[in-house]
Image 1 (cartoon, rainbow, N blue to C red):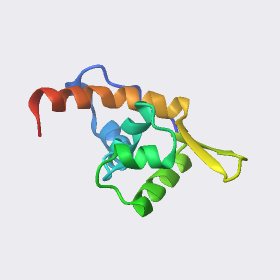
Image 2: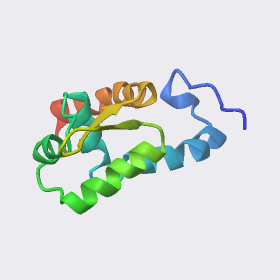
Image 3: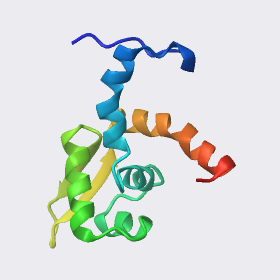
Image 4: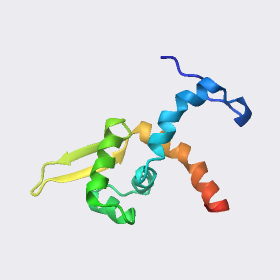
Length: 114
């Protein structure tokens, strides 16, 4: 499937581009997904650090979101063979690119609120 080029101006988003983008936007907009991405971008790498950085998320839901992010090649999971086993998470290049795309939305929120 050939991807449409990214429009440079908001008024140039056509119907086909809008339909193609919907699934990706809905994925990022799922509850806690953006917050987990932001926590990873701020340096959290261990499960407990991410959980502490995302106020209100349950361990079960954090596990589910990390697995989803990993399945979309946005997050990489590294198992470190220590006793006990240690697991670290980090954004992939694709995840860092998505995080960079999210930054204007964060700036918008800081400027205008909800």
